[in-house]
Image 1 (cartoon, rainbow, N blue to C red):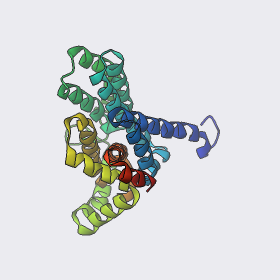
Image 2 (image 1 turned 120 degrees about the vertical axis):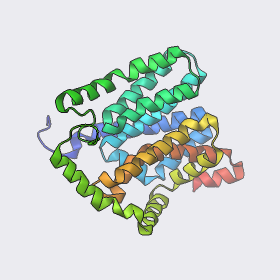
Image 3 (image 1 turned 90 degrees about the vertical axis):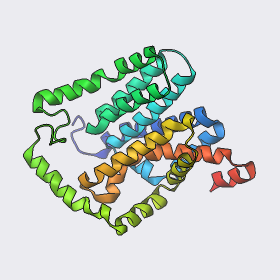
Image 4 (image 1 turned 135 degrees about the vertical axis):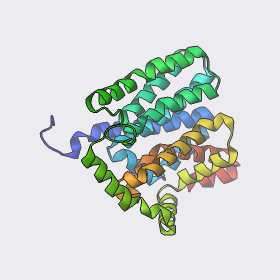
Length: 277
């Protein structure tokens, strides 16, 4: 609006900043979990994951959700090892970013809270996280409730009032795009898209699923959470199956970290060619 036109040039600086911040967090999180080799491999794996990069450069909410989940996992992990007030507060700030990005964003503070409880964090850290992460999220839900009677307007129609026209539109999309999920052709298409456009994230998911180490629980549980959210979103995405995959971008980000850690564990004679590939 300030530029007087709809040119993508006006939004490009913010999108590029998101892109840089996501890759900076990829490096920091992988380095924190498994060292410099894993960080290098994770960033290279991200470069080989077009779906992740497209989801950020698209300039929509998925850049924020990816940044929020990476930052939340990083802050929770650092807070577990390093005492102090800064890390739970930072985790709360990242949870607020995710909660502000989309109507399903309430999963961020819930995920963070469950992570703190699972790690047996102190009551002080839990309180700091809630103070930093809940008020703005709650304020937005309260605002929607006051204006519409529905904190998730215009979803959750069975519990709260909705816009009838919008609900009919969503129903049309659900009938149009939801049916293919029950066919073999759709699953082949999903497999084709992921192996072609997110191969490194896919390998990382497999590595995290096989190992299932508790110290990496935030990675595999976060990836599983957003793959589940993507699954639920498919019937509501007007752009179809491919376009819906942007919702899974946080899962792609955690997947490439899993791939980076997997490559770092390989013997040098194997890991070197894997990085080059």
